[in-house]
Amino acid sequence: MLVYLITQTLNGLFSAALLFLIASGLTLAFGVMKIVNIAHGSFYMLGVYVAYTVIQRTQSLLLGSLVAIAVVAAVGFVMQRVFLRRFAADPLAQMMMTMGFALLFRDAALMIWGGDPFTLQYPAVLRGSMEAGDVVFPWYRLFVIIVAALVGVALWTINERTLIGARLRATVDDPEMASATGINVAQLSGLVFAAGAGLAAFGGVMGGPILGGYTGVDFDLLPLAFVVVIIGGMGSLKGALVGSIVVGMIDNFGKALVPELSYFTLFAPMILVLALKPTGLYGRA
Amino acid sequence: MTKTRVLDAAVVVALVLYPLLLPGYLDLGTRMIVMALFAMSLDLLVGYCGLVTLGHAAFFGVGAYSAGILAIRASADPLTGLLAGGVAAAILGLLAGTVLLRSRRLTLIMLTLATVLIVQETANRMNWLTGGADGLQGIDMDPVLGRFAFDLFGRVGYVYAAAVLALGFLVFRAVVDSNFGKSLVGIRENEPRMRAIGAPVDTRLRIAFVMSAALAGIAGALQAQVTEFVSLNAVSVEFSGEILIMLILGGAGRRYGAFLGAPLYVFMQDYLAKEDPANWYLWIGAMLMAIVLFAPGGLTKWIGALVGRATHASPLPGRS
Image (cartoon, rainbow over the protein chains, first blue to last red):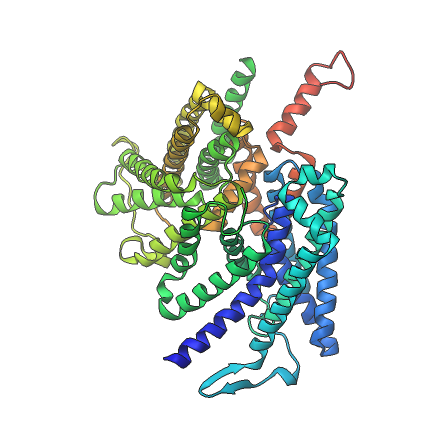
C-alpha cells in the first residue's frame, strides 16, 4: 500500500512537472496581456514535433530541446508582434485569433509530420528504473521532475531578483501604471509570450518520450493547463506551481482510483477553489 | 426602420428561394437553419451580454436528448418536443448560470467548458437512456400539428425548421430591442457603471442566460426531430467552438449575424468535405484569422459598410 502510494505520488509529480512547464508560460502571458491563448497547447505539440525531427537526425535530446525551444519561441514572438498585438483591447478577437492559429498549427503539423503517433528517443543514461526498497520508478520521469524544479527556480529568480522580473510583476499588477512609469509593455508582452511558447515547447520535449506526439495532443493538454492557471490564479508563478501539483496529483490519483469520474475529479477542485476564492489561490482581482 | 424591413425581406426571400433553387439539398438547408437558430441563441450571450462561452452545446445537446427521448418513450408530437427541449435546457441554464455567472473571461470560458464536458460524460454514461456513443436512435416523429408528416425528401422538415427559426428570431429581436436588451448592452460595455446606476446586473444576466439556454435547447430539439438522431457530438466542446466560429463569422451582437455566419459555415463544411477533407481545420483556421484581421465585427458589418459606402456618398470625405 505504501509502495503504491509513493509510486503514484511520484507519477503525480511527473504530471505536475509537465503541467508546470506548460502552465507557467500561459499564466504569465495571461497576467501581462490578459489573453486567453487557445494556441498554447499547440506550442507544446510543435515542441514535440520539432524535437522529433532534430532527434531523429542527431540522437541528441539536448539539441532537440534547444532547437524546439528556439523555433517555437520565434513562432510565438511573431504571433504576438504581428497578429495579437493589434487586438490588445479586444479579448474576443484575441481569443478567436489564437483559436485560428491552433487550428492552423494542427493541420500544418499533420501535413508536415503525418498522422502517425510516435515517442521521442532519449539518452541511454536515463533508461532503466531507480530501485529504492520496493519502490521502482523510471529514471527518466525522475529526471523530468528535477528539470522542471530547476526551471521553476530559474523562473522564480528571474521574477523576484532581476529588473526584468520587477517590470514583469509591475505589468501584471497594473499595465497602465507600469506603462506610465516608462516600462515598454508592448516589448515585454512579446518577450513573455515568446518565453511562454518556448517553455511549453520544452514541456513537449520533456513529455515526448512518455506521452509522445500525436494528432490532438494539443487539445488534450489545453484544458489541464487552463485548470492549473485558474486554480493557481492568473498571472501568478507561485499559483502555477501549486496548481500544477494539485492538478497533477488529483489527475493521477483520480485516474488510478476512480477512472470513471476523470472529468469530475479534474473540475471539482477548480470549482471548489473558485467558490472559496474567485480569483484563484494566488491571483489578484 | 426601412433597413430592418429590407433585411427581414432578404431573410424571407432566402428561406423561400433555397428550396426552389436547390430542391436536392433540403437536408443541408435544414441544417443551416438549425445552426442559425443555435448561433442566434449564443449571440444573446456573446454579442449582447459580452459573455464568451465554449460550452453552449451543453444546452443544445440537452434539448436534443430531451426531445428525442420524449419522442421515443412518451409523445412524438413535434411541438411538445420543442417545448420539452426548451424547458429542459432552461432548467440546466438556470442551475449552471447560478454558478457560472459569478466569473468572467477565462474563468467563465473554463467553467462553461467544464459544464459541456460533464454533460457529455453524463450522457455517455447513461447509455441505457441516451444510446451513449452509438447515439440516440429510433426517433419517429408524428406529423407537425397532426397534419404534415415528415417526408423522405425533407420538405416538411425544411418548412417546419424555417417556421421555428422565424418565430425564434421574432422573439430574439423583441428581446434585444427591448429596454432589457439595451441594459444587457450596457452591462457588456461597462459593467461597473451599470452596477453604479443601480441596474440589477446579476439578475439580468441570469435571465439572459436562461433565455439563451432555452433557445439553444429548442434548436437542439429541432435538430433531433428533423434528423431523428442525436449523437454525443451534439454536447461536445468542438461543437461549442464551431457555433462560436459561425457567430463570429457572421458578426456577434448585430442581430442578423447568425443568418449569414451559420449557413456559410455549413456550406463550406459540406463543400470542403468533398473537395479537400484533409485540410478542413486549416481552412477554418485561416478563415477565422481573416475575419478577425480584415472584417472585425463579422461579415454583416463588412457588408453593411460596403453598402453604406455605395448608397450614400459622404459629404465629408474621410469621415463616416
